[in-house]
Amino acid sequence: MLCPSSLACCILTMVPEGPERAPLLSVAPERTPSFRERLLARWRASLAYVSIALMVGSWLLGGYMLKWIQSAGSEASFSKPFFIAYVTQASFALLYPCRSIESTKSDDRSHHASAPPPLVNRIKQALVLGCMVVAYRSMWALSLASTPVSVNSAIFQTQVLWVYLLSLLVLREACSWLKGLCVVGGFVGVLLMTVFHDNRDGTVPTTVLGCVEVLASACVYSSYAVLMKKWVVRGSTLELVAFQGFFMMLVCWPVFIVLHLTNIEPFQLPTGLNLLVVLALTIEAILYYVFFALALRFGNAVLVALSQMVILPLTAFLDYLIYGYLMDAASMCGAVCILAAFSIMTWADLREGDRRGGGAVHHEGGSDLDTTVSGCSPREDSSPA
Image (cartoon, rainbow, N blue to C red):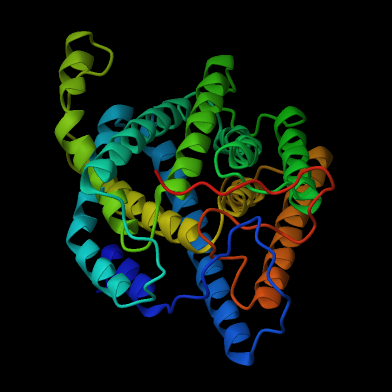
């Protein structure tokens, strides 16, 4: 059976590198990409969108599993958000043995490839990212106890707006009217499905505290995604994720003592059915972050954020299949806006990849569509810290 880390290594080592990204301010003569370059572009685009699809699927699986395990009255009840966040993130350390395969393959590629930063810097980066993961996953897991899955997903997907703004400020991406239109369209869809919604889960009402928790989780997650995109380079994708697991394993265990002594979250090990669910959540978390890293590696932060908004109409559809909840007119309009925004972004990304011969989907540091707004000129790209 192919484990998640082996699957990640297969994707990372079997994909040939495309042409390097030129500086944003440089002017290169236009040329028609060769057939091989167009084929390579489509191959990499396919891997990017397969990674996105698997990432979205694992997120949905984790959300409904957490919902089940934390629901009062269910067969399994284990409401320990920090424990779940600790175990799932510490499991990222299992990816560390695979980082040598990725690094070796990267060394055999073009000498123009960006070399990974020094070990000390990578550890510092992992510490920052690890803190962010702990914060956003804990708040998100805690919020599920006081918000329905669909409402929770709706509020969380506002992260696309923060990712877009942070990409302009941190990643120095160029302003693009088409990209901005897709972000606004997706955000409008989120508002329609969040503000004008019916409470479809009678057992879990929507509370203000739950909404604040998931909104804070979305803001922290947006910062995490942008920094992950900024810092990930060839040869260090799995290593950066694995270091986050080591951070959680070695640094965050004293939090258990504090939470236990203050009776905020008394320590308890899962048993029986709860243990099986926690193990399943651990596998889901590894899968999600493996495919999340691959999606950021081959795509850009805004594209990944926009793709995650598709989770909302999917959860509404699953709610209909599982619980029989029907979507109202506003929610249907919102779902159409989200799906249309993602479809337009996908079309534009594929078109740009064909034009550049492998460009738009996988350039590190973000990609720029050819619809730059006058007055929003590209700025100098920043190198990984």
